[in-house]
Length: 234
Length: 234
DNA sequence: AAGAAACCTTGATTTTGATCAAGGTTTCAA
DNA sequence: TTGAAACCTTGATCAAAATCAAGGTTTCTT
Image 1: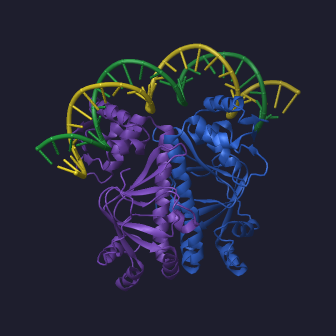
Image 2: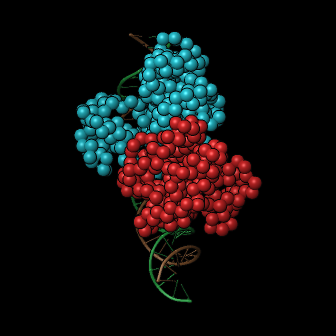
Image 3: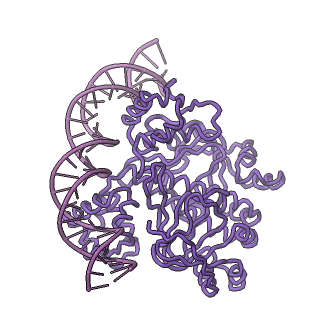
């Protein structure tokens, strides 16, 4: 959690457009409509380690990642950090605060220099009424997220650490797997947090998977999947 | 998983109305609008143990609980059962399949005699366009669910089993706690599954909490919370 | 009301993965 | 470019909770 903590608001006029035309929730609209939305969108940049928001902030904006990526994490009741997900360009956050008038439960931190677009609650609500198809897109996104989060939760309780790690690698590979080489998008520490274990255990389990000839570590962040079927099965 | 497996479709005309006027996603509309929705809604009843749907079913209906309750669970990659949540009257399920043209990932089983209302994808989409406020309600519900699921997932990785049990009891009590007696809505087996442990451990941990004078077991399903603050803290 | 089935509890044992510790490596900033 | 900080790996130990086992209880069915 390196953070220099002052949210520098660089309102850089140019990237609004990219933002709107980039994201799935808007880019199905026609050009004029996107232009209209551009008007209401605020852009903001963050350095690596800066917080976009923190738990307890009350929020009335939807934040859409334009460039870079955000680490969404929470601190548990007992103070430990848990990586919830990583947001990449086109993905958004802030929906809870936005639709429920609540405060953020999560922290959002730039993992690298990042720019985001923000749209206020009232502007968004106007848009949702005017263009109901936006609602459908957001519903699609949120329902997918519910599913993803429930899948993850189910794995915590039903799979061993080794299986969770293996499934994570398999997920990275994805269904449209040309090459069978995956690049870890997280540090081992964050990966450990995401799959609910410690860095030490990740290190050991990767070694085990390698000894079982299921994977081959190419570099610190590149892993070749040798046997996807048995990796999933374990 | 006791299941007699034939979904008996009792289309019982009377309860449609209750269903529509009961649920948060519709009951903010005015009477005529609810009447219109009633037209499109199908009612269906299930005996205890019957499945409303199963993983792999492709779904094009949103299912809203009218009476009784549904156990939503999934089978993990390795075949173990995980209780995801319990749906009570007014709550709905099926959103993933509905908005994403995917198959169900979960099983939905009646925990007791239950009746549900179902609305098809196309009817719902018509309604969403006609009455955008319904979208807002569903967005509200889904975003709350994302949050809930992420909270639950974070607890699995950051809290001990004892803490998760304690937090579960505290959640049951809720903020508007008149009495400090909670009634477990689940069997110990399902409770164990929900909080990610075994029935044996639930049994032992409840005993421990009692020995710490944090709770008092009144009957098999009634528990008096003696010290909520320390229960949450642990 | 009897029997079966599922559920719950308690005990003994085992396993998994966390924690503690220390050395090695990469990354970053001055 | 050199030091500091963060990160990663491996080893040794320990603790939490799963598993195995068996008896007791409740619940459902007939």
